[in-house]
Amino acid sequence: MMKKPLNILLISPIGRSVLGRAFCFKLPFLSLPMIAAYTPDDCEVRVVDERVASIDFDAEVDLVGITVMTPMSIRAYEIADEFRRRGRTVVLGGMHISALPDEALAHADAVVIGEGESCWPDLIADFRAGCLKPKYHSDRLIDLAAIRAPRWDVMDEESYVPVKLIESTRGCPFRCHFCAVAHFFGGKYRTKPVSAIVDQIASIKPLDTFWSLKNVLFFVDDNIIGHRAHAIELLTMLKEHDIQWFGQASLTLADHDDLLELMRQTRCRGLEIGVESLSEDCLAEAGKGRVNKPDRYLKSIEKIHSYGIGIQASFIVGFEHDTTDTFAQIDHFIRQSKISVPYFSIMTPYPGTNLHKQMEAEGRLLHRNWEDYDTAHVVFQPKGMSIEELHEGYKWLWRKSYSLPTIVSRISRARSFPAFFIPTNFGFKYSVHVMLKEMKSHPNGP
Image (cartoon, rainbow, N blue to C red):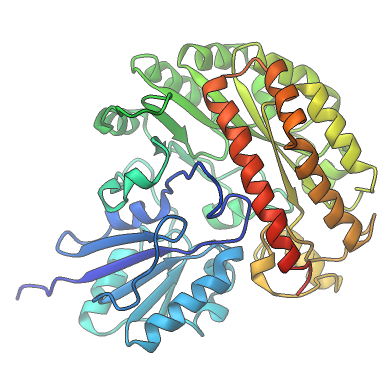
């Protein structure tokens, strides 16, 4: 008997963060194209990203799948409830759902716990057979050697900046106190065979747009140098291709001249690096003291810059050892280090993390309004300052770093790739303006 074709709608909800709807340079995302790749061929799959498109709740669909991060969960539940009110079957998955599956089941017919690729085909089969189960557990970590290529045909590529996403690794061997990556993707660092990455790069069509960057890749790996031998093999392969790329790495990169030279040769234009804190006590508290050494920050950043690689550095405020002096110290460091793009987050105890367990046990969580768990609001009682002082210091850092004089000063002194980092700075300037304006109507707290 021929299976009935299914119409499946996959949705990524919008959040309020600085990288939300207002951010000028929208990157595509990998999660839903990956799920689409594991959907049976006889199904019709569409993707809606609320950053760039609106949802048609009257669409004729058989199954709705929604990927959920914590700050988008309230919106995801609203979407799910509306589709269910109209008689549609809804499945929820993602990091937040994996941490709180029972909460999510109040808004869904089924939830996916863990990496979705391994159990999504079984869920589709059960749905077709009329025996959908409430919970689908990913019983194993996906083998990256056998993983399918994402289906980019389900995305409206014209809605995003012309950058292609590539995944070469998953997981993280570090278990930082505040991070949900190891909880969701596992503590084992998995690598994709370079031969499979070659095939993906070969399938990318050259971009011919007004955009000044051509043939640009972004490696979504949390730390592209986490497995040294794999990184060397990957970068050596990239030398054979006419591409430019961005990625994420740790500051330990500065200790490896061979990797830096390969990055220069393969036209690495910039890296996102988690500086996190200037305090050894804060880093030790977070479980990142082995990786980040504040007394070596300036030298490490200068070393990376010397290879023509720009840095987007992220900072977290609200550690137990942070005080009101922390904000000025970070501002001074940003100017001193000449980083290309600073990014700031308030410490946020996401469900499923050790930090959340600690804050809950100590009675320091202010509320469970997940929409405010967006790294832009204080959702716990800090130790070294008041709630108001932490929130105002956070906003001060954004305003100071993205004032016009500061941007001009930073760009004029930087040696990084201007075609990317100049528009990025002004994109952040606009997004910060929108975010701070919205905060006036969304006061801190529940």
